[in-house]
Image (cartoon, rainbow, N blue to C red; front, side, top):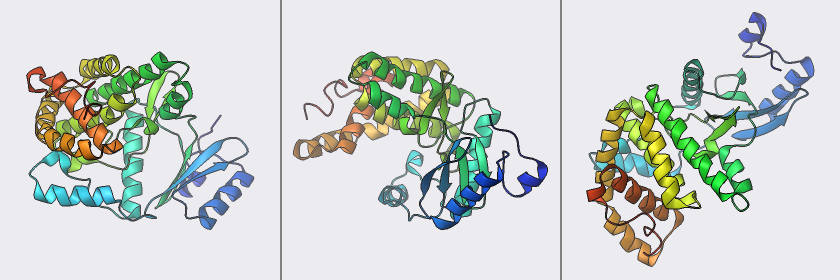
Length: 292
């Protein structure tokens, strides 16, 4: 069981009390490695070290920035670029806000300007899903539905994740927990737009990972919609209407080469268009990305 740090320990960056041997092991790991994510076994617990500012922006962020300048769509804007210290501050602030609102998040063990040490939360939802997909497909799909429901609860609380993915979700006493808060889209777009983008990003996983795609998508969307703010639903209708304009081109490209990213885009966008506005759908989700 983790014990809160003393005031003297907090002044050194610790959020919980650690034994001297664990402190020494942690400091060695922080000083000797520059890996962005690192697992470390301590005497009483397992922790994850996460560093910011060690990587150059990905090609996706560069492309997103370029397209955002060309196209007048707010939902395409990337989060404001920050240095390592700024990225770490953003992540810690978001984690603490989520915790204050009652959502499960990893415990903070230690933090500095460019690194944070988090307590292990066990397998991610993606790891749970991978382990049971073949033997228990219904339970596998139920985790996707549960993830969408939790995202709706998050949105109802006036929050957004920024980059929701089942690899960034975990289970704590049956509840979905959240981690990896590297983006804050509500700083460059209205909150309802960021929330609509959230559910679209999650459906990139739901629509393509589900064993029973139609049933799971219907259930996941219904659970999200039960909790989601009405304005987020309105924004989702607008967002999918815009993205839907690119579906004919995407399908045409898919006839030549159907990559996994393109397939996710087609299936998620097509399904959500149909869900928020059935008359706008081009074709059923079950066919999107499969017959093309």
